[in-house]
Image (cartoon, rainbow, N blue to C red):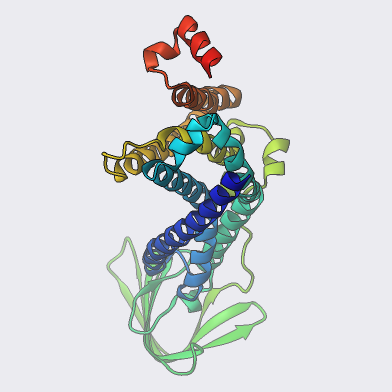
Length: 370
């Protein structure tokens, strides 16, 4: 049908333009956020672009749903304002007949959202956690930056190097403070270098002084040395001790049911159900009065989107704490939104008032007339 094809073409243009704008905004915000996390030591500064890509990919289910929602509302609102919907409705077709071409257009988006939510989302979260873990467990040498005090991985040492000598393999004017076994040691040296020995990696200090003092004593032991070695870390990185729930695959969540796992499943499946429910909601809220500003419906739609997503996050927390079961939340939240969207669609399709919508006699007369 010509109307369906023209509707899908306009939806494609609107959806593409909206998605580009949303992704650009999210990438800018994510870049600022990732740079802040890197400056606090959460990530390696060289991995900023990689982490930003993973975070944006994790946001894609939400961006696709929002882009589809805005595209449908803007397209149908434009058709209402230009009286195209008036022609469609006066030709004997009801508002419910618009749902089918919209679903035909939206089903690839539903498929992509499902793949992202069930497969890609846990993978991106896992990669982000692995990058965090690798940077947190990096060797003490990699933590040291010239001109800055830096704490070691175990928190027992503080390093300071005035300047590098040769590509992080050595430094001049080295200062090390160690607190271990009830002793506090301050070591300073003119220069230092890194050597790998069979027992591990060591920072070899040349021509320096070592001050040692027990915490419960005021006596200080001072010694000078020509060469002194301090172990600065291990070669191998440890495996993550704690694996967050959002990094587990969907199959792993189903194999080990628990409140935390059901809560994560409710979030992933909710992303899919939300995308479907928003198509029905968009049809219902897109009708506009030509005398009213076009942005009114769009603001209301965005408010609805934010409110629905907040309910999804709140429901996830309630499942994790045991206040609701998985089935109760899925039926109570998504089921009720689906029924409400159908009632709103029926109201506009039959041109009823809300009080008439629940009147059985008027409902039957309207259906018979339609």
